[in-house]
Length: 493
Ligand code: ADP
Ligand code: GLC
Image (cartoon, rainbow, N blue to C red; front, side, top):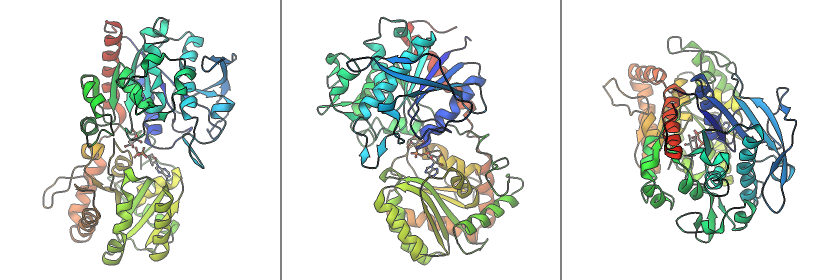
């Protein structure tokens, strides 16, 4: 089979810039595709906050990007994804990307996001032209890259890039990139695309919809979410578009970077451990209790949370359930997260109200996230919607049992415990209600105290799961080949 040329175009990539799991995916999948022999490269903006190091070097030529009234210029920095030879290019442009944030500044979403990300799309294509490297497939991620398939299908259709296939991955359908009409001229797109069955939604340009209408193939990050988004309840207004394109839509479960997320080798932890040697996990729990000023009690079940504080994640349910959980159960809780300011304050309040039993840090801290995964007994994720979710997979790998709501990728990755039977990797509940969450935390807590042998079995099964990218990467290769065949009429040999 011929090696494919694959370009990832993305707003985030670990370890350079990360808001959520999209960055983890884009930082990991290309490395596994490269191991399969493919020529994979990544393009991302060089935001002011992006982590640069001595491996970065600028390309000699400036990059002209055909947007707006006159060509705009970028400087391209090249490096590699750490631990691989996958080239990663970062586009630097003062007006669009000098500010540190990715999507949202101190006053909300940047009001020029439409132009910033149109610049990313056109810039990525210009870079291919400049390098003389015409990909077989361009793989875009979420609404920020929605204009790219449209550019290839219209303005660039008769150029060498016009034969390039596109795969568009939905990481989260909730965020669609609603934009003013000015982006049509800015991105130099044909106004004929402003139709309800193409770019337009309610008088605005919908960048996600552009991607969904124009990509050669569409994927999303778990099979269950691929079904949910085709229904009125789960489609965020785009379900009819997704039903229309159902024949081109697949759900491929995300993997995790199991070299980076390995409790036996994770150098950020105070002690390492594995399923066969769990002593290090107890040491991580002790350190976590110390770090958050909790009572040093090895025998009390510790529930952890690492999350964006957004309504999607259902942590308002946890906030409401807290009095019942903390007053009636002998448990500890630690939470690391940021986002919604009301939720931030509620959890700050809980830290004071349950001092010594509840630890809260508002913020983003990659190493602390790992300590929580390693040191907790349970990991709480009451998501209202969860396209895939990576943190429950990290938790299982670190021997921490997820307590999750049955939605999206959580359905595909966590098997519910059945008392008395050797099955299950976590605790699953159906309704997004305070009562259901409280009862399930209670069930997990009772299992910890009353059924230690079964608890140990759950932990062993969770740690034995294979969530690596290896199998999902081959599914993506199949998807790319299918996309190339649809675009060009021939199957890549
Ligand atoms: P989402 O992308 O919806 O936020 P995922 O579970 O797919 O959810 O991925 C979240 C990623 O972001 C994980 O790598 C998780 O560890 C990380 N993360 C989330 N919040 C924080 C935080 N406050 N500090 C550090 N890492 C975080
Ligand atoms: C999104 C989703 C999350 C998913 C991640 C990576 O941020 O909310 O469920 O795991 O993308 O695909």
